[in-house]
Amino acid sequence: MASGQWGDDLEAAVPVVDEQSARALAVAGEWVGGAVTAVGVGAEPDGSRCLVVHLDAAQPPPDLPDVVEGLPVRVVSGGAFHAQTGGPST
Image: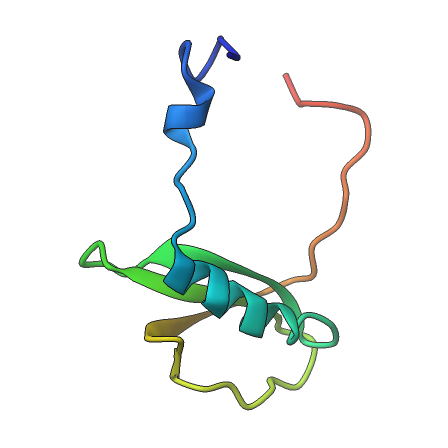
């Protein structure tokens, strides 16, 4: 078990991906590339699960469905993801 910021039970802090979410991620994973920079399972304002699709605002947005495997699709537009170097900031 890891300890530190997340306490002694890091595994308990990481949500388990259920079958519905896994199927939705498998479908949405095919979209990554071009304008779609990442996909993941997130939460709507009411706390219900949704499929979060991150788009690069510099690219034309693709046509995406409203629902995948029963999960609503929430689009987040922003810049592309880039790896950072130099370790954590202090």
